[in-house]
Length: 129
Image (cartoon, rainbow, N blue to C red; front, side):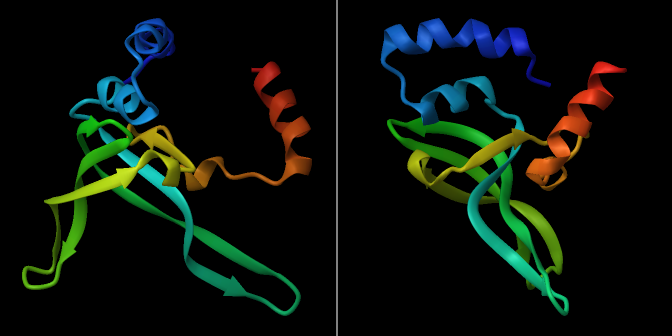
């Protein structure tokens, strides 16, 4: 699992080396599983007066980066074998990435989406332990 210290320690070297965001992410998460949100929804559930969109994410193991292109070994559903596998290489422009997170058992990107009016309550819960 990536730590806050690792995130901070890698920043100065990335700046002086002129690394792109994709190259920074590739070094930080090398061989780790991440989920990447690019702004699309995989489903929208509509009720009478409201609708809820569920964010679509790509998931895979970070392989590397070339300039502004992040490369992952993506998870995909194999129709023939009827299971999820890795090995479909995906090349993602860093400009398409809205957010990403390590897959580490501490929640998903979807778990981190809140309404703005919930933020004060969240801060209060965290401050109080």
